[in-house]
Each structure stands twice: as structure tokens, then as C-alpha cells.
Image (cartoon, rainbow, N blue to C red):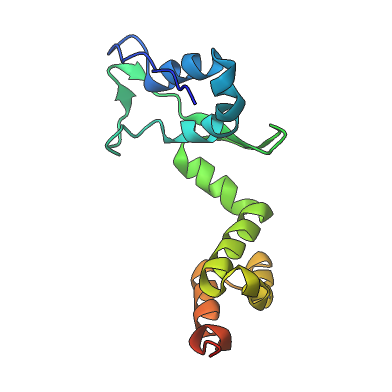
Length: 148
């Protein structure tokens, strides 16, 4: 795959987001993938490459607005910054379903994922928090006694 270089930063002229928006939107090969994950990644704009918080970028205002889109590019949520994004993602049933499924896969293996359905439903229904969900997985018979 031939991935083009992105223009180097010109402090005070463009923010990182602006450079990436131009580079990714301007090349159809880039846009075909980046249109799915750039909108959610923009929520991280207040953090530099080393993970340090910044209120602005070389004197330019940070735009940390974005959206999470589905596979058809339909926005599921819009947000401004990470706190707003995480709160809105936490309210989505798809997030709970995805996270609980991945954790069950990790704990039990893909073939045994169905062993966590009761705990996954309790998490989805708000009867368990994430911490209690972990405990349910770890305390299950299947987790503590592997078949020999």
C-alpha cells in the first residue's frame, strides 16, 4: 500500500486536526478508511503526540468536536471532547454489548462466550456495574476450573 506523507506542521498556521482533515479528505484512498475513524479520533485533539493536555495548539484553538459513526456513516453520537464522548458512548447499548462480549471472549475464549450471557444481560440491564461484571466472569465455575 502506498501511504502518502502528511505535510509537516507549520506552527501557528494549522492545527493537527486541520492538517489531517485536508490530507485525508483530499485523497480518496485515505478517505475510504479514515472517514470511519477520524470523526471519533478528533475527540482526542486536546492531547498532543505525547499525551499531554493542551488548551490550544501553538496559539490556535483546538476543535475537539466529533462523532461516532456506524458502518454506513450514520452518526450515532456527536460530542465535544473526551468527557462528552465517553459519557455518550457509555449510554449506548451497543457499547455495553461490545465491551461485555469482548471481555467474555477474553475470559472464556470465543467458543465459550455463551457462558457469560447471564452476566452480559445483567450488565446491559444495569443490574451489574462493570466492576461487578468482571467479578461475575472471574468467579464463574468455568473460569476457576478449566476442563482437563
